[in-house]
Amino acid sequence: MFTGSIEDRLKIRERFDSYSDAVSRIALDDYLRCWTDDPIRLGTGGEFRGVDQLRAHWDGIWRAIETMAFVTQIGAIEIDGQDARTRSYCQETLRFRNGQTQQLVGAYADELKRVDGEWLFNKRTYRIHIATP
Image (cartoon, rainbow, N blue to C red; front, side, top):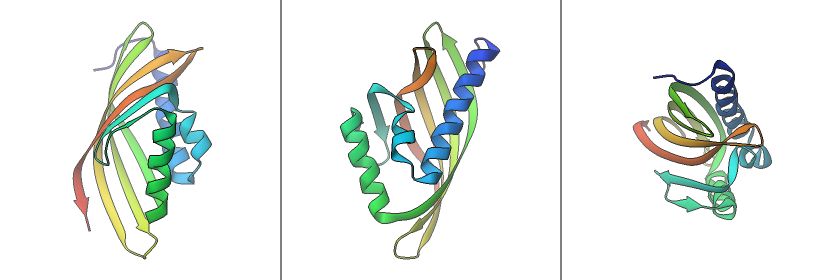
């Protein structure tokens, strides 16, 4: 389901694109700019609350992974005032520092907030659907 103004839905889609781009470029500062000041990330990989925990999670991922391609497909955007809920799917191809690769297909259930005119992730809940060795 898609609700809300086209302008807001476009801004939310651009947030997803910015997030995917930051992950694929290994750009921590750009990744953190996708989140509110009080972020929550739940699901596969653990539970992380606050910017400092997100930063620590990021650092842990990139100690093991050399590079990643991260692509997102949005399944739903529902806007209610200054809040939005979304559902999306991602495909990740990971190359680990030991030379191995892995492909993942996952799903996110998200809550976003409009902050100073920008849509930012406040809560992301992730689960893996498919993992190939």
